[in-house]
Length: 277
Ligand SMILES: C[S@@+](CC[C@H](N)C(=O)[O-])C[C@H]1O[C@@H](n2cnc3c(N)ncnc32)[C@H](O)[C@@H]1O
Image (tube, rainbow, N blue to C red; front, side, top):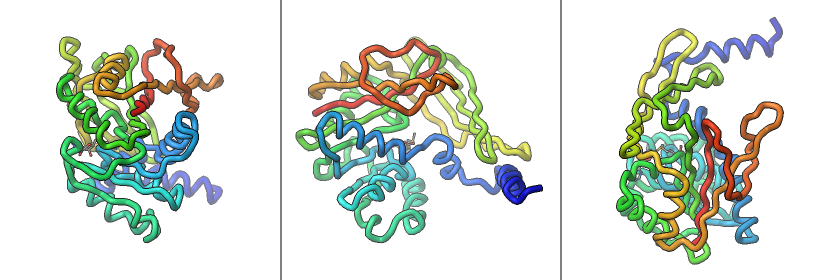
């Protein structure tokens, strides 16, 4: 067996439930910090003709996007906010491996509630991976959107993501084989009357072991028109939807995002929303 092949097969069989770390698996499965930071730069160039320097990453978890932000340019600063001390400690413990001391100085991790945390206004506020779906009523989500508005500088941009499509309203599971493990997105419960959804993330390993319910989310499945209207109601001037292009060969998303008013009525999509203060 060639050396490269041997390495690849060893790598594939390497993970098991007992040797795996759920935060590492989460980052590998659902996060693309470089692409996220590319997107922030793209939007700032398009809408403001310059680069942003300060971001606040709400619901930051391991804060990998904030870390990528401070790595990108010496003039960049980031604040990450999360309620959970355990996930923040996990991120903090990895700072020395991921950032130089100078980069780490430009990152502040805050244990706190996004509704109560106040820092100096920033260029961009991020709420990614649908984390703000925890707010289940118009009253509560508007409270958060008002905090986001107040957290931004006068020309600031609030960036969120959203998911939808016909499959999002179904109770179903979807598997994705990754490097040495399988990621399972489990839409376990959906109530069409009030929009409540419970989703889990499970992981399965080549030796048959599993980590069930590594993460569980109790969300309201908001739609794009609702989110846009509520953002406008709290004072944002304009709300854009960035829709992903399609790779003609694979039929999958191509990571190219453009502002549009017409999306595709497909089974599953993820979009970015950008609200201009
Ligand atoms: C879905 S994870 C998002 C992680 C990361 N932002 C990402 O893009 O993948 C949601 C995170 O939100 C945090 N969280 C939930 N409610 C919060 C609140 N009210 N204030 C701050 N963080 C909160 C949780 O502790 C969890 O780490």
